[in-house]
Amino acid sequence: MKLVAEQIDVSIGGRMVCRGLDLAVPTGSRWAILGINGVGKTTLLTTLAGLRRPDAGTLSLDGLPLAQLPARERACRLGLMAQEDSFHISDPEATALEVALLGRLPHLAWWQGEGARDTDLAGKALAAVGLAAVAARRAATLSGGERRRLALAALLAQEVPLCLLDEPTSHLDIHQQIAFMDLLVGWSGRTLVMTLHDVNLAARYCTHALLLFGDGAWSAGPLGELFSAEVLTRLYRHPVEAVNTRTGIAYLPR
Amino acid sequence: MRPLPFLLFLTALAVGGFALALATGTNGLDPASVWRALADRDGLDRTLILSLRLPRALAAFGCGALLALAGTLLQALLRNPLADPFVLGISGGAGTLMLLAMLIGLSGPALGLAGLAGAGLSLGVLFLLAWRGGLRPQRLLLAGVILSSTWGAIVTLLLALAPDAPLRGMVFWLMGDLSAATPDTAAWPLLAAALALLLVWPLARGLDALQQGELSARALGVSVERLRLVALLVAAAATTLVVESAGSIGFVGLVAPHLLRLAGLRRHRALLPGCLLGGGLLLVLADLIARGSVAPLQLPVGAVTAVIGAPLFLWLLARGGGR
Image 1: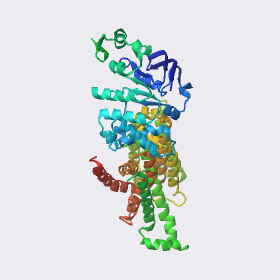
Image 2: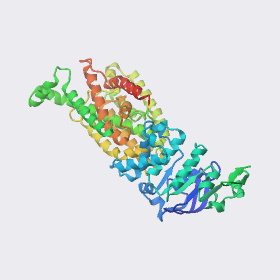
Image 3: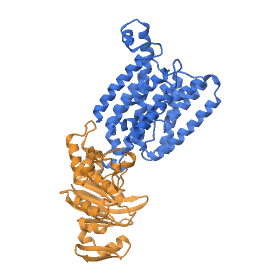
Image 4: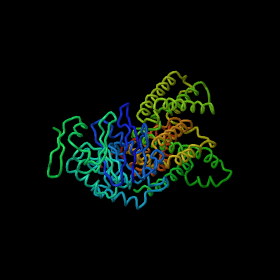
């Protein structure tokens, strides 16, 4: 599954997120979108997901223009794990399994009920994120970290080759962050694009990065070539230094 | 209970409730003699059942079904468990103009037209205020609540200014009153409810997904804008039809969806058909009490729905509250 952006302009509320962005996301690559708060990471991610039109330029998925793809067909190829999850407020009775089952939605015609295969897939997805034991519990009673993993289970059940994730590790402690990211990269063959706050998580788990500097400036490429203390200092508008550790280079604020 | 067996159980209950409504009344007919009366082709009792009880039971069932469907749709659309068919002021507009028409002595089709005009007026205002390249639920709810209380205030003024003669009828009608059901029109609400169900049932899974948040629903391929539009229009049409045929019957639309959810119909694919059965059943039973409990006096059915519905709802809530 290859996602290609050609010369796209994205803006929100009169502010430029990126200007003339060219991006080719090859199958199996893992991308981190990084930038300071409010630079437009989520806006860009929803644009890449086909849920928001770019001001200019075209997006294509496997050579097909994303804008012309019917919504359900798009949802069979590409999934988004949003930052929000609100079912615990608006649907407090839904069980974890029912939430995971929603991932099957694009694969089911309106007249079809969820079959044994769908339930099986949702159950396996819950097991994969370590939530098998709480499948029958109300999702509203899960902890913040468990709810993130539940959202991931729904994405797993969606069986899409391209996954976009908005801040997948927010609300997670260090142990959970590592477990979550290990789980993510453990999926074979899936292409991942995620917004992240943590540079070091990006360095540890991603193959590529897309940096948003503000005012439409961007740079993209293999993470190893892109990352340096100077670039990150410019990105975060705060001095960053690279420190050699046993697990690799760590970037720390000065 | 699992959804499908429960729906079948509910169907049986609905049939039972309907039969009970046909078999009981104030003129001393007992259930056993109803069969005999129905078999007697020329009997007076047969005419009585077919021209009085059947239309009333049909209208009650249909109105209950419509109200429950509208309530469920609006609760899902606004993502607010307190939403009911009257929350957006569409029925308020219909009711107010109909009341005004009653006051100036109109009746029959003119009354119906006044109701349609009121509903259309409200819907127009809602679209004007809540449409920003698509329906915005927060704006819709806020505009609806304000609109609804405005209509409420106008109704209070009308009642204060009304002469004594039509006042009792107006108050009865305001609280919901099924006594106007006639054999010609009694089946309309039920047919409309069936049509509404056919229209919205294909959207059921989308309504489930919408509870996850708008962005998540869209990412799953749900056409959220179309979903909201259809849900709003169907709910508005359903509520208007009820107001036109039986006035403002409160509580069923708020409580029937919650009763059904507490009974296990949480997903909309099961909940929407459940509304047709459960909402209908609830109003048929409420109407039985309304016309039978203090016979020969009749109570407004809208008051009865609240009086029996509220404790039932609170009991169910208390029972399930520990989870």
